[in-house]
Image (cartoon, rainbow, N blue to C red; front, side):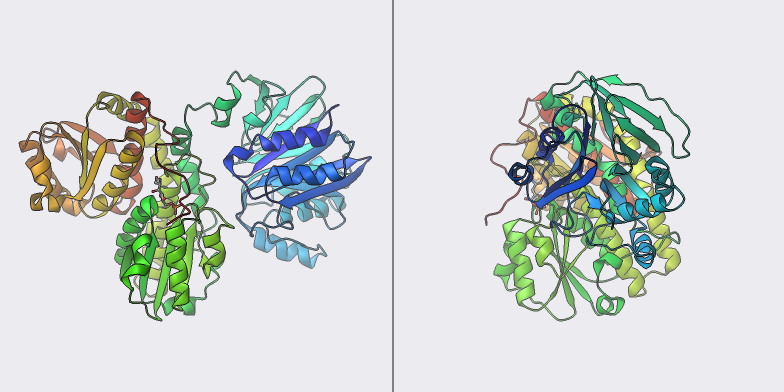
Length: 612
Ligand code: M6R
């Protein structure tokens, strides 16, 4: 989720690296740095803030260098600070690494390397890579940096794209890719490295996209590729013909679609390292003892907008799994209603940006009243993550589109995992019960990929219904909670009127609105409630409304009862909030695109609402 760059060639390496970094900054970062070889000696410059802060530092002490690596950081392990910024260096200061991804076994590696004499200066997982490489270089790799990288990579668990510069290899850079993107741009007598294609496009359109397990020794004008076993592999160079603007979006017309497509990876990232081999939740990063958490007998969740709707699903799931009462408040209402708070309570603030004024104010109110607070945020280093007593982040990566999509889905993941952890602590579930749900959760990325692969039916619906004006999302149980988010997304991007109701509420008022001009999405995925929801859908169909049923695959019960059907993969009821929202996002996207809406920046809205 961070940005990696590299350069070798005749141009000024610092100039190219800073330019490449600035081309990745559209994703929003918190610190930046670079490492170069200056007459064979490693030099590192890094700072908190934007690339322009780094550029100012470099300008103060210009370097005539032609080989180096750079990084813009999106904090995960460790807050944004200069020591935590990349590159990270070995204790001897003779090699440096930049890294994207998460090293899951960083704690055990850190302990081992520290015992071996490595001196750690940051809180990051990345720093273990520098020390591990140094240990391999001094030991079994006998000074061969490429060999050291292979040996080190074999010991790293998790996702990583890494670039290495070392005094022991003065004319090349080494890179490795494992589940985190990395490309190599090929120029005339010069070579570029980047985690995203836009960074290299001003220099070359000939790009090798590395695959998982690829390792490369990169020289000015040549690249040697191997797999993790050191066997040579071939990857053809592709010609990229996107313009720069399209390239920032990875070739997509809109960030919204790109971010919808990133949802499976974002879910996997948010699960990563949080489920142990026995299927139990690993919650060490919460920094709250089991004893402290066992004392929590009530929960209160505060949030706004989409995050509030994630909280609604979270409430249902926490109450079901952990059997703890949960209140959900709109953050903008929380402090004005004099909430009743107690010592046995925890207030959870959910926020993508971590800067939403109302959510921050709600968190501060809870803290002022002496209640334990927990942040579920996507931006580490944001005000909310700094002020909360504990954090349980989502790892969706930067979200650029104003409409939240991948962040919402990762908020669900975080809240489900929290529910399981609390359930195990208070005995509501035993180990087997927790493992059953974590096993199911681990299937979510693949189920979502399946929905994305079959999107054409939904894209077609979006285009066909683009000129309808009135939309309803109905459902019961978890489907009712999901309906709220489905309707909000349609409102904010298409500017259509979209309502969400618990299906059982229809007869108490909204049924009066049902006419042939209304399109109703009936979410009917909850096994125990499906018949009741279907009979509600028949009530709206009887008033002439057009009905699209959203049901699980293989559930034939709705054939003939609704006008059209969207089938989501068959899975546990608990997983349905993941599987119903992605079709709704796709529907909103294609409908709004057909209308030519400003999809990534809808009118009147901002990504981060920092005023009350
Ligand atoms: O950054 P936050 O999650 O705190 O933002 C809360 C809302 O402003 C946000 O979810 C908003 O509703 C989005 N535009 C939804 O797509």
